[in-house]
Length: 249
Ligand SMILES: NC(=O)c1ccc[n+]([C@@H]2O[C@H](COP(=O)([O-])OP(=O)(O)OC[C@H]3O[C@@H](n4cnc5c(N)ncnc54)[C@H](OP(=O)(O)O)[C@@H]3O)[C@@H](O)[C@H]2O)c1
Image 1: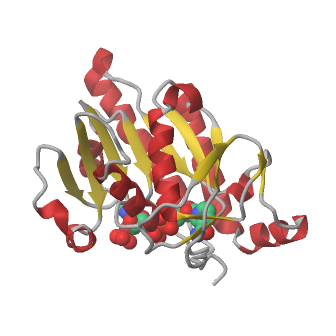
Image 2 (image 1 turned 180 degrees about the vertical axis):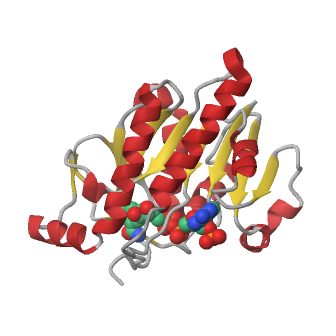
């Protein structure tokens, strides 16, 4: 049995991952999905089919990332953890990524203590940003990239701090992290995928559909042996949906 824990399933990326896991794209035998959301009713509004899905395969945990016991219950025994608790708004004091990383690492530390030799290292899929990747280039002039990074530096700083927390936990053998770097994300309401490729270096597309990003995250989880510990860029190969970048608002 494979347990996948999805933190933040009501967001754009979280929804795309859940859609993938619920569809044939996921293709994971004996899959159990544990979902952490702040509002179960919001989740059920977006995914009414979850009302009738067997509770043996899907468990919904309602709580914030700071709710220790709920988080621990959600990730208990998970082989794959998708971290989609995030924000697109660059306020000065944004710390959601590093707070989530710290809470997740603390919860995994407790589970390792509880389970001792039965603890099995999960793979953590961390959604970062291609603007922070020097091996994969966005096809935009350097000064535009520098301006974007400057304009929403608080979000990037938060993501960098979160990355450092995951790297420390990986060194400690607590988890295996795969950092997924997307370009500008588009089409939050578009459910059909149009194509993507995984890349560790080279030139990427300027944008990507959330639907493709969701499928790519699930694929990365499947391919943990190959991508564990790595930073992977995800680039579009098909048509793009409507723009969804309110990072600069
Ligand atoms: N936009 C872009 O073009 C772009 C490009 C590259 C990378 N990124 C990165 O992608 C990330 C944004 O992803 P997204 O668009 O999927 O975000 P999103 O749609 O805003 O989703 C955020 C999710 O986090 C949940 N959440 C927030 N605070 C929480 C808390 N304290 N406890 C539990 N859950 C909480 C939200 O729950 P509620 O539904 O309850 O609010 C929601 O499910 C950012 O890190 C950004 O840097 C964005």
